[in-house]
Image 1 (cartoon, helix red, strand yellow):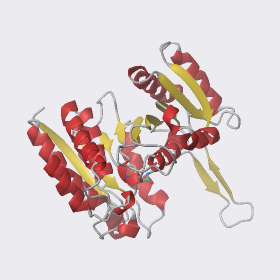
Image 2: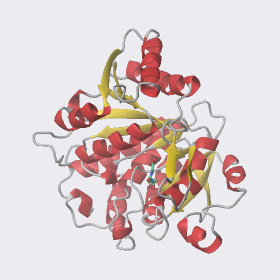
Image 3: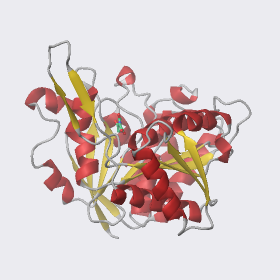
Image 4: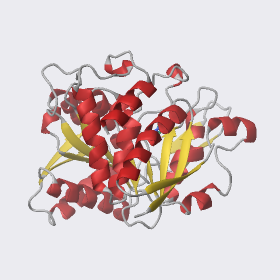
Length: 352
Ligand code: GGG
């Protein structure tokens, strides 16, 4: 690959800070590996919403579809309800581009202190496969009888055979390539239709992967076990909502949301995939120059893997591992340091 047409949406809050910082080192590594990131930057997000009533223009998806890949910062703003910002930008991209795999790796790096007693570098390492286009995030429901005492809200979760099978199969494939251990997270005791359907499909697909051991956990138990025995997880597969929640727990036990990357992937390549850090806009630290850019850089490594530039992705991860393991290296406040975003990036660039 010579060139990747990269659509960049820095978005809200610290999104622009971490995106710009990460792109500095992504460019560096891309150049070393003989390709270039040709970017088109879109100023879509809540500032635009406040001026025009739309997070992105009507033709946004057409423009993005012309790109090879999308790199996103963050979405969310205190002046606009979160369901407006999410449904105005992030979710339409995930759904319309059929980015059904949300891949979220979680690693406790050497040099990072987990809030869990007794865990050190390398002790936690698993990946969550979150269903990303339906489930509890389906836009199915409504409100009736507004203003009356009998006002009612209905929100339905949507689980299709196609949608469930394909995320489950992708997770099995990942487990077969890793340690051969898959955990399926549901709430089948209470959600006796959708989640039992999910369990049935896990059973069916498991027959294609006899080498993979399957564990089934209710989401409440999984939440406890992510704290009590995170070292035992290898690959987790979960619905849209449960995948979102478990990856926030995972980010915290591996040190910080500032280290959690994410890829919204359309594996067939029919549409562009979108890469974004797990964290949101973190409005409390906007403009202070202390946002951790490493989640964004690790997200860039996932993007490089997706482009088939695995060596470029490995270079980024190696440099980050070395930086985090070095007690004298700059670290942002979320990791207990006092360094700024640019200090971290400059040090990383030196190492690269
Ligand atoms: N980094 C993207 C971002 O701002 N995410 C915030 C968020 O609320 N995401 C919701 C979700 O992933 O479901």
